[in-house]
Image (tube, rainbow, N blue to C red):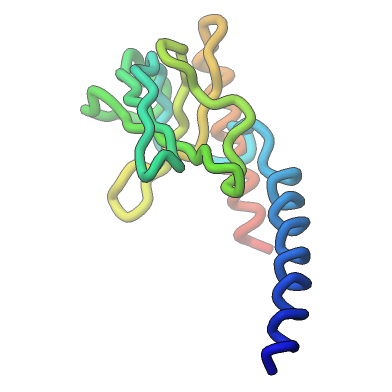
Length: 145
C-alpha cells in the first residue's frame, strides 16, 4: 500500500500542473461590455493599490466621478483581483490613479463589479447604452434557448 502511494502521488501532481497552466492560458480577455449586461456603469479614478488576503489579492478603491448608466448614491467602489500565480490574475490590472470604467451588476441586493476598462478618452453615452442594450438582448436570447 505504501509503494502504491509513493508511485501515485507524483503522477497526480504532474497531472495537476498542466491543468492549472491551461486554465490560466484560456482565461477571459478584457471585459467586453456588449456580452455581459450591467446594472450600473461608473467612471472613476483608482486609489492606492493595496495587498489583502495573505497577498493573494490586490485591491483599490475607485472614487466615483461620473455615473454613465443607472443611478447610485455610492461615493466609491472597492475593486479587488487575484494576484497569486495559480489564480490567473487579470492581464491588465488597474494601476494607482488610472481612470477606469467599472461595470457592476446587482446580485442579492448588492452591486458586484463584473469588469473594468481603462478610460483613455471621453466615452460616448450612446455607445455605452447601445453596448449594454446589445448585452441584454444577447442574454435574453440565451435564456430563451
